[in-house]
Length: 139
Image 1: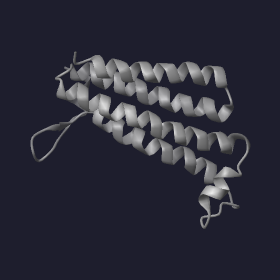
Image 2: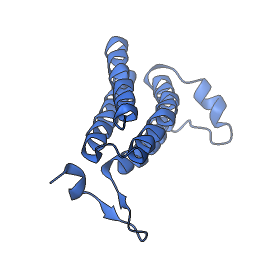
Image 3: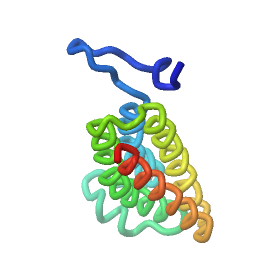
Image 4: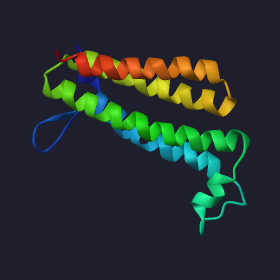
């Protein structure tokens, strides 16, 4: 039994939503989570949110940067999953790499908030490695 067999949800059209698809969805909400941490104080100004975010310092500023980088990572990760699936890559392999990517991106954000720049860079490379591995899984 494959990992993806346990967590699939059949759609009306008969195609399954895979673990990798769920990882795309969760990854898409990750930037919103990071910026939510940055905005989580009483002085947040919803009338001028970009001005507010530009004036942040410390871990809140790094949360904004984690949010920005998360959008960039999503732009590579989501197509990688879809290309691999279209190429009929092993779904179990794609799911495993997608979960690894998701975990690395979570660790990446934590490293960003904690200002652990060396560890953050290593984790970033791990995430990029997962994305490339997903792309080439169908080759």
